[in-house]
Amino acid sequence: MELILISNSKLKIMLSAEDMKKYNIECDGGSALRQGFKPVLERAHDDCGFDIESGRLLVQVFPSRGGGCEMFVTRVALTGSDGATDASVCIFDCLGAMISLCRVLHTRGLGKKSEAYALPEGSFALILPEFDRDDRLPLEAAVINEFGYRRDCEKIKGYIKEHARAIFTENAVERLAAFA
Image 1 (cartoon, rainbow, N blue to C red):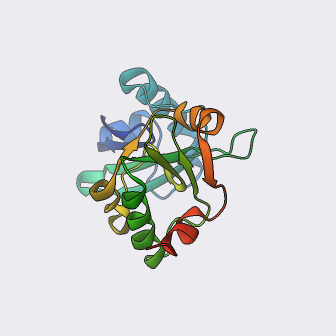
Image 2: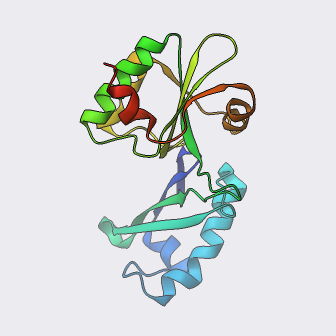
């Protein structure tokens, strides 16, 4: 078995035909897959720290040559007790950069439930719930890095909501795009 941790929320598992027999896993996604999958996940947790407890898991299974299979396991972000998801936070040095990014994201149909804040140190933050902080950005949103940078700290969203001044708490991307 080979385990490749792609991100904190994505894992690739490659099983040989022998591994599949050992763990009683079938590639058709039937009950045998579910029975043998838990020990594989526990090993992934022990070997590479993949979190198997804090969220739902999406599992994609693909047969490989020689009787083995490849599995892609994605931890789906949970909604917290305050209704907030595990979102990406983008930081900008100036308001103009955030507005420019919002124009680009809006034209691409992104940023539907976004929030914008002015930080105490003079920078700006854009919270994008549709992008899990652990995930790689989809191609249409990769432009974020041209205007600002993503922060992947779990606690930054709470810090922003407590210490920053809200600019828009609903549909910030659409509303700021109007200023571009």
